[in-house]
Length: 583
Image (cartoon, rainbow, N blue to C red):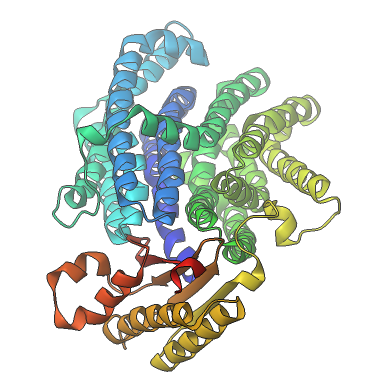
């Protein structure tokens, strides 16, 4: 089921990674074709400020994934709603404050970025800043709402929102250059309006009656905001490192190649960010699933997740890298149609960038997995090394040897060195050079339950249900429990699993039900997870339907029972008392 989840989530996570970079990519294309190379340079100089919006939105998005994966893993719906309300409230306050701040300080900010104090480059940089920053609430909302859409199983609506944003941005950009002639301010404003289009599309779900999240001002709390911030801190480190790196590379390129080199880097960065959405998507999948599995203390699931993440990271890195190597001239000509130094430099840069996509995908998968498993400090260190320190040092040293070509090697050098540093740390902790999942995960020895205290089984048919119930009874008896408790556990399993197979499985689709039984110190925990239509047995029981007799019987036996619907999955956790209840 983990394999299926990764495949389902990867497309949506990749598209969510495009929500900010896609508008920037379209703007860069339009700027290059209609406003010229100097305008591209102005866009490149404004980029670090624009990335701050993405950094904060990314922090909240990651914080939501960390905090809500914890509450989903424990089946606490109220905590999930607190995370939702606090994230929305914080997003609105920060985005509005940041928008006003940049509007007031856009002139000194343009100078700080290297545009000078007057002239065309200065006017274009501050103009684009003013237009783009008006969309800060929309662009930040696009990032923050993405994980909630995924948790609610609304991936199709996410795709519609991204497509709507893309079409709107193209239309608004064309209106700007062909009708209104608004220059760089108009290009930034076009992006702002397109973000609001995406936000409006997404809000059709959040304002509907079928929305599984509830916004309430009373649910906004400082404690939850602190939890969101702490959960998203590693992402801030990564995004802040990217802002710093762009600033440093712009300065290096101005020194070795002038404005044409900065323009080439601007296009390279845009193409690179768009292609890098696969690694960002890998990171989002890794963070969400590792957080849920970690808080379920599912050691087996985490091992499988790690294996699949690395496998997909290598495959996607090779695939996207090959596309960039072959198609680099075509992609660059979309931005810079005239042959010349800027075009030649950019093609070279894109091809060298492609070589770093494999280690980049693996790095994102690993650092997000460490974040999801609460190794936050390690994630922060990897983010800073990968995002700023190692590529900046590499670019500075190699620019002194090979000029601009040396600068273009920053990506593969930084990503490869960061991966080597991570592996060196893993090997040091394990005391051996090994890539075994147990060593890479670095879980504490008492994490989860021992193998002998765990029973797992996948259910596809009613015959599987009967077999699972028999195995559960034998499993319980083998752990020294009496026949009464063994019968209770077998009955719970049989009632809930058969109900899912009979009423939930669709013959036209391949449905799955996974069952997990844990023997803990003072209780037995049964977890049911299926990919059928949403069904909450906890809410269904009070209706008093005759066919709910088996479910009501299970409720009566359970010490605690919790249901959540997330990632298009029904998750039911039933806890039964241990031997003390078996009288």
